[in-house]
Image 1 (cartoon, chains in turn brown, cyan):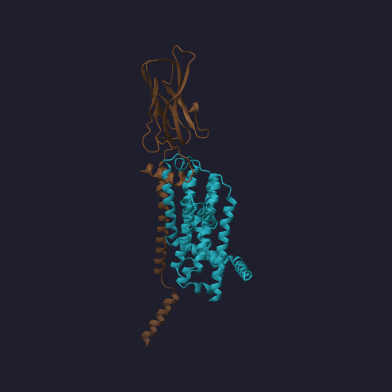
Image 2 (spheres, each protein chain N blue to C red):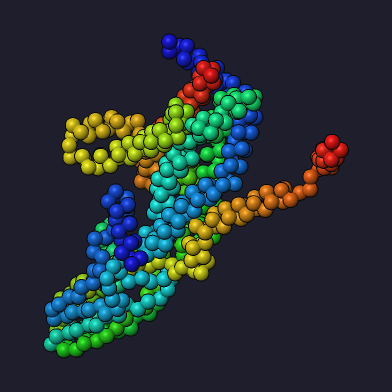
Length: 218
Length: 270
């Protein structure tokens, strides 16, 4: 529900006006095919705006490498990220990747299917389109180095998780003026009642007594 | 004829400026009325419901922090227009309707101080709502608002005050020339929807050159155009900041002086 609202509001208010550019590929993941293929298995693209990750939180970019009847040497897999300014994919900051499992091989025999992962920690809020690129040599052909974009990952949303205080502010702020208004109104009412209950001044009481006394006399 | 009118306006303005303490008294009275009723609180609540909604949905969209400020400023600009109309449309005409204007005239308060006091009270109330809304950015935490560009936030807020000021002056002027609250409300809302209609029409008829020529000319009289100039420079790198500020200030000055003259004229006639 919230996702749908978010997409609707942002596209209608900002996107249509050309103020905020959103990558048209919302879910995005696709795998390669051929003798060397890789599929990103996690995070799953899912519906809506893409998988959500906490800022600075670690997540696994899991993949499966499938190799047909080939032998590869010096296989190195690396993670790339889409650079919107230069409109191309560039290697991610090495400090973002804390660990890589099955990300490089001296020799890889086929046919085989190997699962691996990169542990990634992105420090800044934003949309990130990741993909995995592999470089390798075909065994027996040392002068032939292949480099290919093996798999496109989903577009990941890196958003700070909301604290309880943030939720309190979202809910509490609209209620705040209402509470203040009701408080002021009740104060005012109390003040009015107090004024009404206040004993009459002495001169007025005396005047009333005189009048009542005068009436009684006549 | 024009010379006579200008002299009259200058005279009223001079009286108004020399009578500023009376304006303060009127402003205090208006503020008391506004804050002792639920009116100001309701307006604040409407504004905060909108901001909370925007803040809530933006937690799904990781577009950095400036879009959050931009969204809040855009929303507050829209609310400023409605706020100014709602609070100003009955400002002068209600004094006539409730027959308190003759009573006010018995006090040593000039027409200028009456109009300026009401106008200032509307802006102070809007300023109070804006100040309270800063709590979102102070208390919201990094998860809600991230690292906010304070300069853009403050300038965005100032632009909404200028917009409220300009729209309020127009509505007070309409209120001063109207004979009933109903006609004043219809006039003020009509002007507001006309301003909005120009923006909508420009989107609808963007392919029709001849219509666009007319709309672009008419747009020069719209408050929303000048407000957009300010926000465009703040968030999208335009260059119309000074023209936008000048346009809104000119609107405010022109219609406040107009309202002072009309109220003063009615006083003289009475």
